[in-house]
Amino acid sequence: MPSVRSGQRHEAGTGAPEAAVGGTQSIERAVRLLLLVGRAAPAGARLADLVSLSGLPKPTVRRVLLALVRTGLLDQDETTRRYHVGPEAYVLGTLAGTRFGIHALALDGLSRIARSSGDCAFLSVPRGAFSVCLHREEGTFPIRTHVLQAGDRHPLGIGAGGLALLAALPDAEAEWVLEANADALAAAYPGYPPAVLRAAIADTRARGYALNPGLYVAGSWGIGVPVRAPNGRPLGALSLAAIESRLTAERQGELVPLLKREAALLEAQLGGARAEHPPPPRPARIVAKAVP
Image (tube, rainbow, N blue to C red; front, side, top):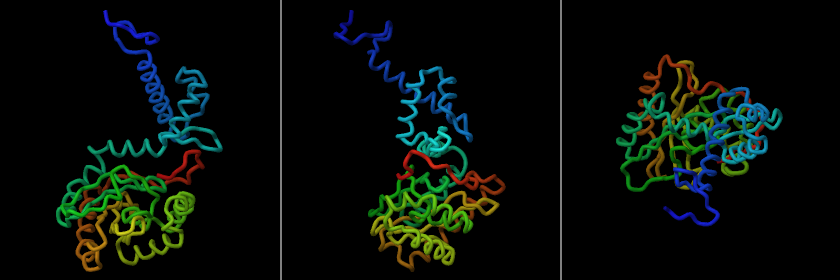
């Protein structure tokens, strides 16, 4: 008979320590509550409803919800106190969606961009006032920039892909984005005050593509173009990132047509589809800090 150390009981027939069982139970509770909140979208879920639906004690539900808010998997509206699915849950969902939608359709094009340029190619999509990198395709050039990775989330306007998305929005919506991200930009993106972003939007529209001249990380440059739905709204952005010496004005002139060609092919594949990312409503203020 296997020995059992003092103070460590096992479940009959499993040999699992009580601590392990408790840890699994906590995970199962968190997943259950996360799913319940997700099913309550878009209205959100009240604490009382979650207690009733889950069958868990109120203190337990509150403790688990606060942990999920801290991780970004849930948000809580400061006014209504209702819980909503958070930004990190969105990131997980979009990263898991590699078998359908814009992500799957963009893979061949991203591969061609990286192969032709030798630099890293990216697909980013808008999520409210933020952009999420869905895919990074490595180039062959030995010196690479590692600023952006799949799953990274930044305010719209940060980086070439994020700027391409922001500049593709109508003026009023672009202004809403700048207002919504004001605190996040001031806290974590000192190189992007509102005046700089407004000038970058105007330059992007005039130039026909977005340019990030090392504003986020010195020496890491990028260019990007939007991918639009049939109604003109930006569904995503294709971008390239490289060290500064590889994105001279002359080389930008060579690479931008490559990005635009792949964006047009992707738009044709997506033609007729409904926008995957409709215009974001003005969000409620949330407890969770919206800074990556």
